Structure formats: structure tokens, C-alpha cells
Length: 290
Image (tube, rainbow, N blue to C red):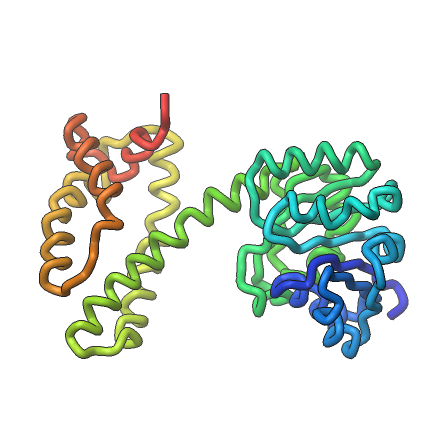
């Protein structure tokens, strides 16, 4: 379609395939490449150009989007095409450490590539939706140049700052909430199903609980930023008292609750420091290493 920026997608796992489909549906000329060529077949049927080599994929367009599980994997995939990269823009969409993002930024600079290191904060099926969040670290001028094209992947598209590792920082900072929240749900489901009830009966109430937690986040963040823990909405001591109930739940439901022990240890240490009447947000002071 005239006026649509051509894009190259490298890495056709679940996210890469979803990204390619979003660009094809939006009318962008789209070139794809994957180490396993068969993964490109369905996209080719939708109108994508399947590159025979990574060099051909990179040479095809000036905007290159990679979707891999880590920064090292992205660099390894692109290395054979290093000579073709100069003057292009590389957008990485993957998990990984801030150090990995910085290493990739240095690698990109060596090859004359503009880098935006980003992340999609949603599942593959949400790619392309108006409220899907993506955020990026890297030069603002590069982000501004490609912002309209990047928004094809999700309407909530954010530039975090000039530092190339910022998306990785937020990816780990925000992503760290996922597994504890899911384990809490799984523990509850184990209890409910031990009574012959279905886990699906929890969903409505769990959603309400999560909404309450979302409501608390701004005030907790303000408490952390000011480091004023002495006027709590949720006192740390109440969570400490709940440790006994967690163990009782384990006994009654025949559930292994040992995954909570590190959290219980933090609560015990905080109470030992005299923080029982402080906000639960004071736990951050124990998480910070000197």
C-alpha cells in the first residue's frame, strides 16, 4: 500500500509471527525471515515476502524488527548480515537484562545501526490492539521517526528515554510481579479444588482483588518515593500476623506453601527492625542492598 513503511521481521516465534501479521493486516510491505523457513510459510500466504537468508531480509528494508528470547540470540541471528546493517534502524523486542541491552546498543553502534530496544507487555494475541503496551529505550529522534509505524504493534506505545536499557529495566521491574501473582492464584485454586469446587469460581473474586491492588499502587509508589512509611493504609504488621494463616491453609488444604517462605522471612526481619506499624511498602528498604 502506498505510503506504508516497509518492515522486516526477523524471528518468527509467537511474538514475531503476531508482529508480522499486524503489519500485513495494516498494509505494510513485510519481509520475514526465520532460521526454520517453514515458520514463514503461513505469513507468505498472507502476503509477506519470505527472505531466503538473513542478509536478504536485512537488505530488503531500512526498518528491521527482531523478536527473540534474548539480546544475545538477536545479535547471533543478525551477525551474518552485519555488513548490511549500516544506516538502518533495528528494533529489538525481547526479554533480557539491562546489561544485554547495553551490549546490543554498543554492537549496533559499531555497525552503524540506530537501535530502539523495546518490549511488548502483553501476549501475542494482543499484538496490534489499541491498548497493547510497548515501550522503548533509545534515541528520541529515532523513536519519533518511526513512531507511527511502531504503533501498528500496539496503540499504547511509549518512549522511556534515551538510555537503550530502559525497556529491559522496566521489563524486569514490572515482570517480577507476574510469577508471584500467578502462584498466589494457583495456591488459591489448589485450596478451592481440594473442596471439590472449580478453579473458575475464583476468577470473579480474584479480578476484584487485583483491581484493589491496582488501586493501591499509586499511593504505595508515592510512599516509596518519599520514603515516608509512617501513615500506612496497609500496615506491615498485619501481613506478619497473616503468616500463621498461610501455614494453617497449607495444613488444611494439603498445599505446599513453602514458596512463600522468603516473603515470610522479609516480614519477620521487618518486624524485628521495628517496622510493624509502618506501611507494607517499607519492605523495599529490606530489598535494597547496602
